[in-house]
Amino acid sequence: MKEISSSEFELEINAGGKLVLDFYSTECPPCDALAPKFEGLAQLYGNDIRFVKMYRQANRELAEKLGVKSSPSLLFFEDGKQIGNMLSGGIKRSEIIHELNNMLTHDRVEAIKSQIKPAVSEFDVLILGAGPGGLTAGLYLCQSKVNTVLIDIALPGGHVSTTHEVSNYPGFIDPQPGYLLSHNMSEQTKLCGTSYKVAVDVTKIDLNKKEVVIDEFETIRAKKIIIATGTSPNLMGIPGEKELKGKGISYCATCDAKYYDDKEVLVIGGGNSAIEEADFISKFASKITVVHQFDSFTANKQAQEKLFANPKIQTKFGFEPRSFVREGDKIITEVEDLKTHERSKLVSDGVFVFIGMKPNIDMFRDKLELDSWGYVNTNEDMLTSMSDIYAVGDVISKKYRQITTAVADGTIAAISIVKELS
Ligand SMILES: Cc1cc2nc3c(=O)[nH]c(=O)nc-3n(C[C@H](O)[C@H](O)[C@H](O)COP(=O)(O)OP(=O)(O)OC[C@H]3O[C@@H](n4cnc5c(N)ncnc54)[C@H](O)[C@@H]3O)c2cc1C
Image (cartoon, rainbow, N blue to C red; front, side, top):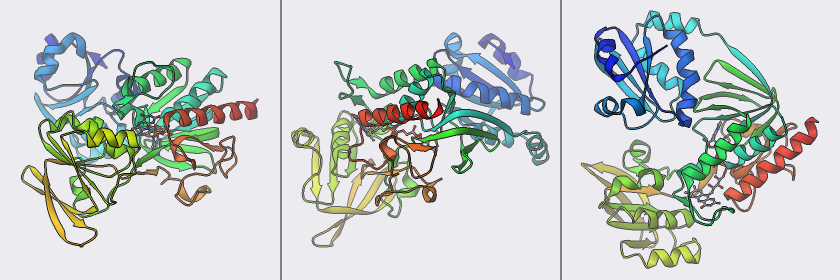
């Protein structure tokens, strides 16, 4: 693979043919996560497509000219023209393959596919999920010299990485930006020596065999598995939601509130997340309407008082959304008055949905004993109903789901496993 600078860019592009360019940076965890995938694909596709890298910090002007806003970013070129989609951030191997395959004929794609050799690796412990629970387990295991791999479908950090501010994690006098807290947690575990396989596609989980297949070709086996897959936001499950998800309907204020500067938004929900996030969104939006099905919020009193004192926020109690439709730039939310059953329409620029969470257990739901809400049952060592399979953090049956309780679970599972393995 070739490293080029901006002065060589024109020459490289004008040479024609097919080319993929990686704008990378140093001290960039997503770039570290991409590097082995890019190398591996360069070997596979290298006869058909040129793989080149450029150090973004030293070639800022060109990066900006090409619309590169974050590292890493992958750009695809054919005969001097930029084609396909630019990929940025936590880039998955499957996303790159998709773009590369679009540049080749069907026959070449099949020929390259046939060259992919399955890979197998073995570890003492495999942790699924690199949120606070998984990262803490990884840290304790690593410090006990247990050979451990952390696998995540996204970049490390879990929910903390998209939380605006964390003010209740002990050890910090001032509130910490969530992305920074999760970055520090992840770096601590990584620097210790835990293997990372992040932003991957988890294609198969076999808890009986204690093996996980990632990116369709790499099998990872372990003596023990820790499930730390956390939770995902509940969807409303009403018409229009699927179509407008990410296109006007959001489930993450930290990620998307900035797009609503001086705009009007709806917030659906009445628990802590909805109320705290509505307050955060008010830093950007000019008007927020909180729609809640009950007559009062279930969020804590302090958060409610702050919300009621916020002049940008109004409330609509006793209403439930029934459908979403886009009309031009606006989202039309049809709501039902739960007392009169009359329906009306609310017009906004965007909608944020915070109506609780569900455990991420789809790939092994029928293998483990669950509680009546679908969370994984564990004993006090964090062992599940299957031997050698542990679970920690928000995915388990428990009363309070917080960063501190997730890191506590991770600690307990790791110490229990270290004792078992020794
Ligand atoms: C908006 C919001 C604000 C919050 N604010 C606070 C706060 O201020 N203080 C506090 O203490 N708590 C807060 N919490 C709760 C806290 O974030 C969670 O309790 C904590 O992150 C749980 O950690 P976890 O490791 O169990 O799961 P998560 O943080 O959910 O991490 C799970 C990880 O597993 C990965 N994953 C999912 N499925 C798979 C799979 N199949 N294979 C591999 N990996 C997978 C995910 O990508 C993710 O990285 C907040 C939560 C939210 C949603």
